Image (cartoon, rainbow, N blue to C red; front, side, top):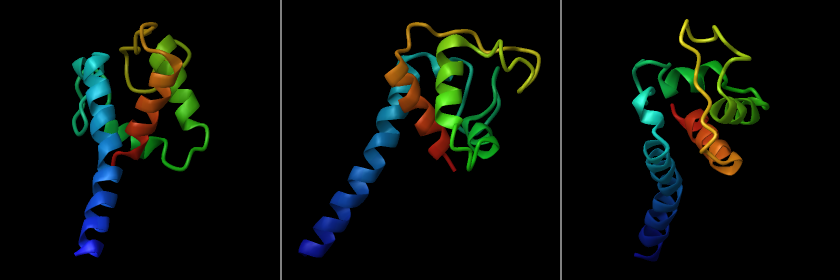
Length: 104
């Protein structure tokens, strides 16, 4: 019984950040242009995660693009650049980037 409770607690703890970060993405209006598994205005989060898999600098790069936009990286995902989101704090941008990169 104790083992089952420990396993359940561990799974719940691991799942909670993903849920919280999806909620953050919704709260910051990211989901207006992005979806987890399909292209909208911007690429799907799964495609972003796949493109940057294994890149140690990806969290910082994506966090910068979240806040400042993609003018620097214009053309990475098509003709529509990502607009700046100055209302997103650096800490929240890093949380969002880490969440996106964790999506399989």
